[in-house]
Length: 90
Image (cartoon, rainbow, N blue to C red; front, top):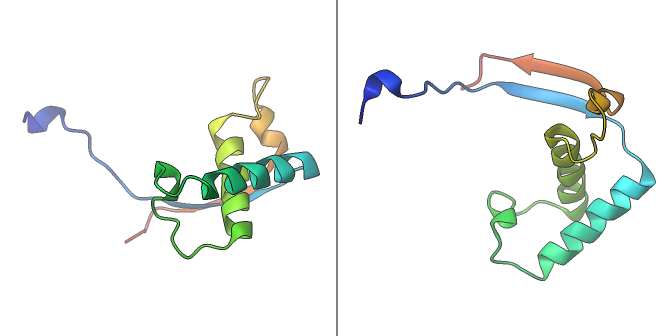
């Protein structure tokens, strides 16, 4: 492998304060309930021991941050109220 072209990775811990609607919550709740019927899906990696509410909120945050709710430029900004980051992550 050519190490000169290898991408360097870094860890950053970021905490987002988001807002969401009842419709977004209910849609995420339905998605989590559907995933429960499919225990072997990749969705479950790293989620062992999480409560339903944690899974639902994670799904909402994932959709906001990845642009699923963004139908116009900068639309995520209306959901993200605050962001705190730290580059000193171990």
